[in-house]
Length: 360
Ligand SMILES: *[C@@H]1O[C@H](CO)[C@@H](O)[C@H](O)[C@H]1NC(C)=O
Ligand SMILES: *[C@@H]1O[C@H](CO)[C@@H](O)[C@H](O)[C@H]1NC(C)=O
Ligand SMILES: *[C@@H]1O[C@H](CO)[C@@H](O)[C@H](O)[C@H]1NC(C)=O
Ligand SMILES: *[C@@H]1O[C@H](CO)[C@@H](O)[C@H](O)[C@H]1NC(C)=O
Ligand SMILES: *[C@@H]1O[C@H](CO)[C@@H](O)[C@H](O)[C@H]1NC(C)=O
Ligand SMILES: *[C@@H]1O[C@H](CO)[C@@H](O)[C@H](O)[C@H]1NC(C)=O
Image (cartoon, rainbow, N blue to C red):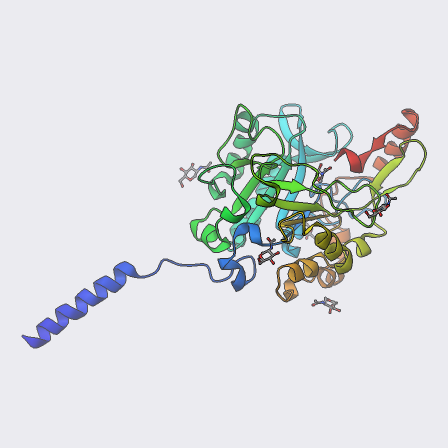
């Protein structure tokens, strides 16, 4: 009698325990246990400006990155920025125009991203794409995300716009499998919206694209209501350009020689601190860099996040560890000829306004 009761009790207890057994919870989020309980918006992420425009070739003057997409993600980049254009009837990432430079199809790019996401299930990633041709999110963009298998991994907010303070935690996004946040700078709030393609400027403001001023003065440059400025997240455009032909409007290219200073901790922190009062006394959510493998961007982000930089986030160490492999990166989109083509074009247009940096 008694043993039977006891047995029943044990079974009931086990059943109850089974029913309430916790679902698997992420304990490490974007590399850090502390991040799991922090809102998506309260983390500082390093972003790669013109992520597709990579080349190991120092003569490729118009490159913005030295290492490929996979290498950028492995270094710790958690925002990928890129600009899309139609090339024929296929969506490509191109620098200003596909006739000038073609970085390949958006689909092949997103497939590389998907491979990384599958291998790294505890990482939240932001995709920030620019849409200068105003292409339809529904008929042009969504099919590409679907084909790459990324649509199902996206975060869809319950309503728009999302206030800075209302974003879910990294942990809950990872647990739900909705760990890709997609922003588009134009048309996301147009006539053909898609629920996972979010309008950038109603939730993020940006600092100006700094052309040549190394002190990065801060100002709110692109923003949409109705949310107040401090209810937006913000992105600092921390990439420096140089004017290699200071005649007329000049020829402006990404400044590789100064990249280790630009991407150093003092420069990034001073830019971030300058923006802090405009950003509700918070650090930037996104720090957009050229040449993410150079300097100490990940260390700066670690400081802004109030954590000790993880060894895997040591960009200079990683870069130093594989100098030869990064030189040999397979798909090199720029050729040395491009720079000469550029200079030729500049001469052809009479030295006026051929500016890569400021166009992007
Ligand atoms: C999303 O996942 C569902 C169920 O797993 C599947 O039926 C659907 O085709 C997927 N959609 C895309 C765009 O991959
Ligand atoms: C900041 O950089 C982004 C990415 O290149 C670009 O889309 C944007 O135009 C820049 N902001 C401004 C104000 O130029
Ligand atoms: C660069 O920015 C600093 C800080 O705002 C400003 O004092 C300086 O005049 C700027 N320099 C140029 C050349 O615009
Ligand atoms: C996150 O919140 C802390 C505490 O309020 C703040 O110091 C930090 O600047 C915030 N970071 C971001 C990116 O919002
Ligand atoms: C990064 O790596 C370099 C080279 O190995 C090392 O000197 C430096 O101390 C490392 N920094 C951090 C923050 O781990
Ligand atoms: C990216 O670059 C790395 C070397 O840094 C190389 O091993 C890898 O094959 C490249 N990936 C692609 C897709 O080209």
